[in-house]
Length: 161
Length: 192
Image (cartoon, rainbow over all chains, first blue to last red):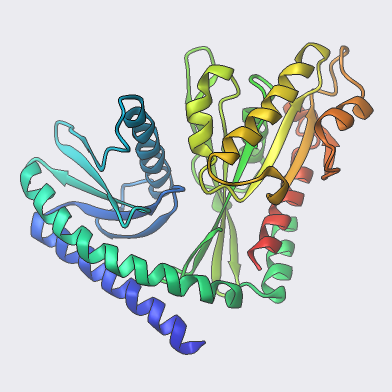
């Protein structure tokens, strides 16, 4: 069990390392990895002024909405999205078919550079996530035991009194 | 399956309020926001139209605190109830862990409730999910209004599975926390 958790943490470490390099290479403000249901997986960079929960939720919704748009014109999905602002822009792309990679960058960085570097990082991240998701499934049941449930339920009761 | 993030030691559960338009889903989530202490909740985000109807969704993150070293978060969403917003409704259901069906008790909305439940089943099936397999509770809302369907009739039409249900007046916070707690606990038990 210890080993398996260690292994998952190792994948996480490599994932974080990969987006750390990506951020450095393109001088992005921050890079975030979000699952398709809208939960943040991990992030690097300056997120001090960012409402992370809202950002993650809207990115996932944005992606899902544009996938529906894609279907309307006969495409399976749009693999990347780009939102251009005056000072900051967001580039969003799909990794391993289930994780959303969002890059927030300023106009000092060109879109072309973001595209190239994100594509390269996506290949590495794809492999890491594939491995990690497999390991997570086996670890899942061990984390959430009866004690965990009991404790969480009592927290729920006190929160929603 | 809820996401367990081993790196940040977080567990996130997604609960969706579903039901016909103008049935009180947003009112439920706004009440929760007003009652939960600011330290335990994030920002309430509403994406609505000028006519006060939910366009995309409302979103409220609530932090349960630390449980055995893990930070447990519940993310509450509402879907737009109006028939023509089915595309956004469907996408909010992605990765859903539990559902609170908010039924409008008014006689003239009875059919809409039934249609909405059918629509929920259809949308879940597109994610290869069955309603019967998901934690579900029902709130019969607007019980303070005069022209309402009896609970017995509502139960027969909307609750053949006999899941937890309760009467609600969401505007006053009546019957808001109870279904929320029941479904959240079911979601937690399902994590096992």
